[in-house]
Length: 352
Ligand code: DAH
Image (cartoon, rainbow, N blue to C red):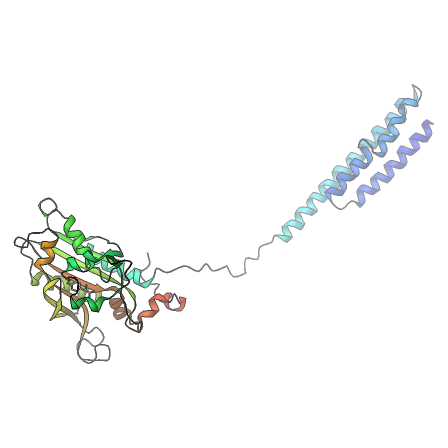
C-alpha cells in the first residue's frame, strides 16, 4: 500500500508542476493551490490515508508529502512572480499615456460685458470718494415717483410706465428712488457730505428694438453738501467722460427737464470716433448724448428730511447699457440679453 501511495504522490507532483507551468493568471494559480493542497485537495485525500499505514511506513509517506510541498511551493512562487511581472507589464501597456496627444482645453467663462462696465464705473467713482449703495428693484410708487417730485397724475409719469404689482408696488423705472432712500438715512451732522452712486436694473414698458429694452441698467449719482453747484457737477462729469471714453473728451451741457432736478441738463460727450468733426456715430453733430443730470430739486431734499436752505446737491443718471454700447461699438441693446456666446466671448479683456 505504501508503494502505491508513494506512486500516487509522485504522479501528483508531476501533474501539479505541469498545471503550474500552464497557469496564466494569478487567480488560476490560487485555484491550483486549493485544488491540490486545500481541505478537499488531491494531496489532502492521499494524506488522509496515512492513518491506515504501519508505524514505520508513515514517515516514508510523510517524506513524499513534504517533497510535494517543497516542489509545489518552489514552482508556485516562481510562477507567481512571473505572472505578477506579466500582469504589471500588461497594465502598464494599457495605461500608457500618449504625451503627444493634444490636451483638453478648458473653456473659461467671461464676466458679462455689462458687469465689466458697471464695475469700471464703480471703480471710477470709488476713486473719487463715492460710496456704492444699492436699492430694491421692486419699489414703492412713493420712492419711484412721488419722492422724485412726480406726484400722481403728473403727465411726465407716462414716459415711464412699468409693471405694477399693486397700486403701490412696481418695478422701478429708474435708479433715482435710491436718492430718496439714501437721503432719508443719511445723517449730515454725523456723516458729513453725501457722495454715492447706485447701479442696478430698471424696467419700463417699451417696445424692444435696437436701442430700447424693457429691462436695462442705470447708475445713479448723488452728491449733497453745503454749497454744491452746477460747476461741481460739470467738473465731476468731465472727469468721468475722460476716464471712461478717453483723455481727449470734452463735455457740453444742454438744458433739459427732469422733475427731480432744477435746473436739469442733458450731458453730451465729444464724439470719440471722429473727435468732433462729425460722423455716423454722432449723427454729424460731433456730440453724443450720454446722460441726464441736474441740481437736486429742493422738493426732493425736503421730502427726504434734508434742509434745502443749508444743503444743495447734484444728481446724474447714466445708462450703463448705453455707455457700454458706445464704448464697445455695440449696435443693438438686445445683444446684452440674448446670451449668445459669440457675442459674450468678444469681451475677454479686463478680466481679473
Ligand atoms: N432718472 C432719469 C431717467 O431715468 C435719469 C436721470 C436724469 C437721473 C437726471 C438723474 C438726473 O439723477 O439728475 O431718465
